[in-house]
Length: 400
Image 1: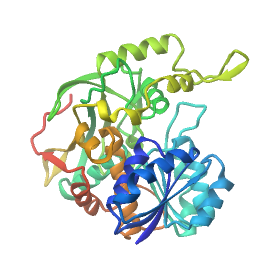
Image 2: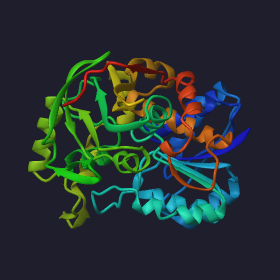
Image 3: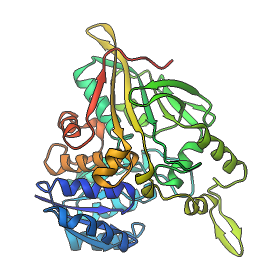
């Protein structure tokens, strides 16, 4: 019986709230806190009559450390679940340190004024969290998150060493809009428009945005174009998985999305550099975010499935081995269950599971950790129980 503070009230947070409410034995009390309290109240209204979990709400500015500290000290949670923006990770970690409470997030820190995300800023908190005797779990969504758990599971049970990992993220969903993003538009577009990169022989190899394309036939979805992107879990997996020679991340995109994105880039709408407009300073990408459909609104109109997983190549007992771990998630089934499309669902469910792992003591130890550093077995069991059952393939088609 534990108490969790959930910071955030967007699409992913709505799934986290729903899954915590389904898991009342662990999450006996939750507080939903966001800058806009009305969003928190709406989530409470949706779930409070369907759960034994006691739900409360609050307004908080996640950029304001003293305000966060005051809320944490007042509510006294056992864990703080950061489901806000990655710009706010360090502020929330600072507040958790001051209050000596465990921390979990779904995406690594990214400066608001620079399209660059890496773990160095959060890894710098390791010694302070260890001395404080509290746990921080970084990147506990799907990718990063489940992909790290998959890697740890493969390393523990299937391989003596893993030499190659290809992470494949396929969204075969159709929301009917010419252009929309399935998670926060600002974060999504910054990620996609950045230069690509992968790790080979211990070094980063940089590519132009969307330069490397492959075609893959995904079970449950079909054949899709996918493109190599920079992604945060490459950095931690390259350090924590034994024997890595190369690790890459691919994500699928439809032609309509790419055409619209290129047009928006060409006219400067994806820029994060402030401009003056009618006497006010605005950031073009933030303005674009305001006019695009809210990802949380896509659930009722999105059909199709996602397929996200990892293809591993390595050695077992001196022999070459290939292994594929993945999950298939149906957009409409997610909407029926929690009122969300599958992108939010596949991020929110692992966040709840990760928090449960800490609260139950499975992943509870002082310091700052990526998920692949923890025991994958109870998490893998929980994926099957809480809505993201995994499948495997011992003879997968490889990516060249």
